[in-house]
Image (cartoon, rainbow, N blue to C red; front, side):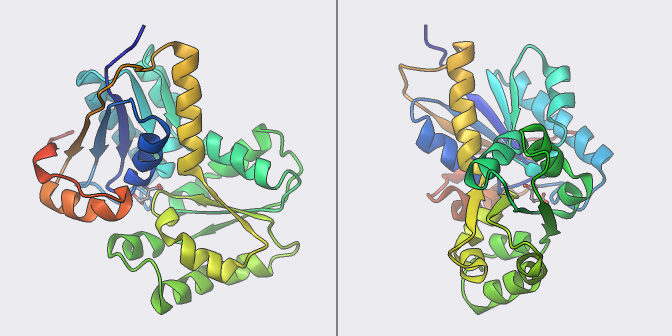
Length: 271
Ligand code: DGL
């Protein structure tokens, strides 16, 4: 049996295309329908209640368009994975927090682990809780919000002196923490694009853990488990945006790593 329906992926904007990129590489036979809530970006500075409401609306819009599973690519919205899964049952829902936490522990089983993410993700402590739940009960964890990484990535300023200076500003206290982290979890969709600058500041002894790649592995496992995989292809990739679809297509290239045909981006209203 092969299920040709698309997998829905959503994010507050374009950053989740880093997760879609990892999904496309890991699951080349699958079709994807990506929703970027560009009208309400950013989520990372909003309250947990508001983000949960937005996440539910986005997931419901994807289900209404016939997706077979939903991936919450946005780390900030992934905090609401359980609530969204309950509302969408029986459609499976997967967030990036749990796979990211497991990957951080795989990279540094005894820690210390540094979690860098948006303000809301750090404030909610979801990665800390997920690391604890995944077996890292005593692992030392240090968290740091890096809000300027989001606009830097969106402007394409992902390397060079500006990106490195800002990375230094955020990471210096993390690196000076005793004991020094062995793994750094990139707990935000935008941060993988800044990996070069982050690595330069963090140094070679800290493993950078990209939750996009580990989330793609988790989706692959879910498809096997549920028998929802598409073995026959061909795959199609379509996009929905809640504002400025042309800008989405243009700026989204930074995150997807390939051009996006503006004709494939549909404007929708989630309200
Ligand atoms: N997508 C968000 C995340 O991964 C970052 C951008 C935002 O704040 O909306 O947390």
